[in-house]
Amino acid sequence: MRPEVLIDEAASRVEGKFLHRGSRKFARWVVASSLMSDVLTTDEEDILLLSNLNTAQVVRTADMISANAAMVACGKPVPQDTLDLAREPDITLVCAEYPIFETCFHLAPLFNTAKK
Amino acid sequence: MLKLHGDETPSTIKEVILRLKVKDATKKHIFTARKTDSLRHIQNLMRDNGISAVPILEDDVLVGMISVNDIISALDKGYTDDPAEKHMTKSLIILEDEMPLSYAIPFFDKYSYRRFPVVDKDRRLAGILSSRDILLALLHELNNEILELEKMINTEPADQMDRIKREFIVTKFDFENAGRASYELKKTLKDINAPRQAVRKAAVAAYELEINIAIHSDGGVMAFEIDDKKIVITARDKGPGIEDIALALQPGYSTASDWIRSMGFGAGMGLANTKKVSDDFAIESNPKTGSFIQSTIYLHTAEEQAAEGE
Ligand SMILES: Nc1ncnc2c1ncn2[C@@H]1O[C@H](COP(=O)(O)OP(=O)(O)OP(=O)(O)O)[C@@H](O)[C@H]1O
Ligand SMILES: [Mg+2]
Figure 1 (cartoon, each protein chain N blue to C red):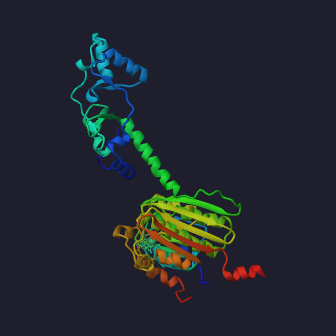
Figure 2: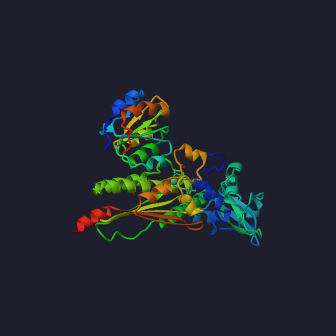
Figure 3: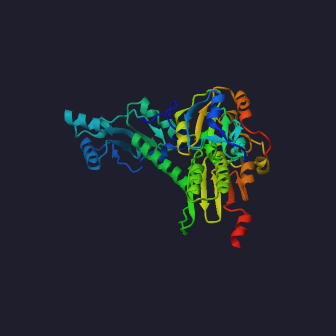
């Protein structure tokens, strides 16, 4: 299994703000896409889902793959219904200041990107 | 009062209004009087039957209307023995029974009348249309619409205790609620302590199929059946069906529009994903009956089952 990376640490690299803190404090992998079916193909575990979207469906998708956290890029404001949905499945929600590419650039060194 | 103009009317109601004709809402069993009947006779007719307007006929042909206001004037001025013909409203605004209901609704705004006589194509009186009749017809039609959806839901009783069955209606373009059925499935599976891998596969399959109903179909139903061996996920919709199933199953093929893509869907991966995570996968589609897609996921892998059997 891939090593754990603290979500606090990941957020601090991208000027991330916590909108909801779930009980799972770490992630082992980042899946970055703004098309939800791309995200749903992954079989990684303990994911941080990074996307451009701030809709309810991002949280729904994160829940389906049992992701530990969802990160919204570009400092996009997150609507209340998205936030509300994150509580029950206990998903950490972070808003990153940087666009997706820069966010990936800053997060990549934290995660072990060697092939599984 | 109902308005058809502007965007205030919800789309389902609009659809229903467009489908209905004036005759579908018209009250057909009504009280009438002859033009030679006295206003007193009409007053009694109104009082005994709780009505507020009476069409006046001459040889079955509509020639006027007497309203409660006409009767009040008659009582006030003392001419209740006069025949109806002398005081009835003759310049009538008449609806035809074959007109679309959408055409009739603005009449209630345009004219000060609260009801309109309706005639058939031979100009014979067919009934009266009031705003209340329109509301009743709409409620009736909306009710049918819901029954239609409910019919798609299986009503078999849950015969076995250790079998869980649940069904959810999925509405077209309802992005707020899309995914709720899959969320409930996942929660149920966790509650019964289903193996983690099976939960994840079932959640992915259910979610892909649920979103497809919401974005590609006219609406449908998600059904889940769980027993001690497997999870069966069934997605059924009202159409319009999938034209080329082989093509739709290809990774990357999508007919989603740009705005759907801006919502995060339309990678063309959904059906391929569903098939990949399924142990059994069935798909049927037909432009008349809609699409039927079923994904079966075993709770335990073949090796686990073999180990259990020993
Ligand atoms: N229930 C359905 N009714 C009608 N057409 C459908 C239905 N489900 C899928 N399709 C058709 O099959 C195509 C492929 O579906 P698929 O789920 O694989 O991809 P998608 O929904 O377009 O994108 P994605 O699932 O990646 O977000 C769709 O674009 C659509 O044309
Ligand atoms: Mg899809």
